[in-house]
Length: 98
Length: 512
Image (tube, rainbow over all chains, first blue to last red; front, side, top):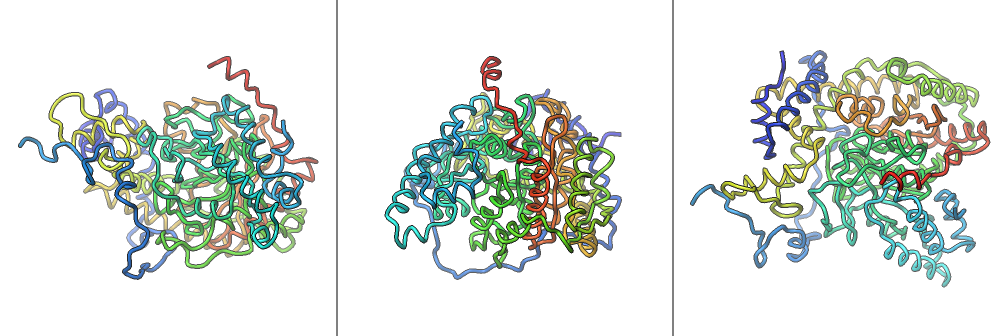
């Protein structure tokens, strides 16, 4: 039985905001299924008494003074913008329709 | 070939200090080498000739004037360096080898770049990599493959194939890399060079375009162990801009490399990891590894066998944790504030659809694969089984290392299971590609440091030997690595890299 269906991949691609052609979806479904099959073994040893590690070297929260540090100018920020209008980023419609 | 480019970074630095050569001469010699061979290798995505020569001239002027300013120069001042194009630089494009960032100019420098500028190392340019550092062969670059200087039909490793190939082909004495699952060490192994993944947090990640934040680490790439020690001391240290940066600086790396170079290893316990040899490792790789063990034993090291039973789950845990972090880190490439924007060909023009077509056009296959895999691993209903389990495996791997380091001061394994494979060999099998990192991944999961040093040849291609040390004990790597380097070079009568064949630039020119 395959773990990942084509429908799953359609849904995941939508969540990840990546448009995919039919051929891409077919290929990705097969590849992901093989990869997930190979890595699913992690659940064999992950018993409930093992704590999770999210970070390799445990550190406590890092705080700093609440003062203005290094910042970028508006020109620097907009330098690489695909589109801008005066001192703002410009994007197509946020909502579908009016 | 100008003999200047054959010098290690440390040797060149000594000649600069002694006034035997100028930094401008050294930089020009490397630029000439790039012009000569990079058409065939494609190690560089951008060559920064003008700025590099200006920095070199500045160092030369300070030295010529003498006095306190000359005295205060960093030991590596004037020695050129290449930068992996995942690290952001003002004044040079940073692409991460992705179409998504084609032509992007960073408005700020990474912390390691600030340190390199302060120490006045001329930057030769930006080196090629797998797109966003995702790959083990540099074949996933959006700007063409990099070729292995030892054999132009072979991969240079990845993701840092550009930095490794640049150093191996004498285009640069030093380079910076990044290592998330082996991207410094595996390219080092297959190109016959040295590469170090420092302890997690020992070098600031500020300005390294994030792939998997709990695994990524910037580190040195060079031809000698001593050069890497100098470079790590330069780029390392606490950085308030990186909240995962270690509070304490690691010291004594250069001293450890110098001590190791005497070749005396009396009292050092070297643990051979049972699970990282034998099946899956090529015969030639295993043979060179066994010979290195014999040399270490003869130099006074005590060889013990250690077992890390949970390493068999490391690859699985890595390919769940890394893509999960990738899917989150790469969400920022949405065509809104920077980078590529691609408008949909038809239908309503909403920002969501713009994101979908931008990411479809901007990302390559491997990046898409990892984003989708990570989205899957983090999605409701699968989170506990996949991401949660992988984090538990991470604990088990740390425990394996803790137990192993009770028996040994450093651990040893082959760096990669095979020598460099042929370009295109794994094109249709992403899973086979992932297996290249089987020996390097455990260190990233546990946050510990690792080094690769050249261990000899098999099929006329380099084999790498990896040492691993406990967290914060990077100095042990430099001692053990420099000792093995000294012992092997004594046996060979020369360095491994000096045995590399001339680069046949004509063969690639004809194909193209």
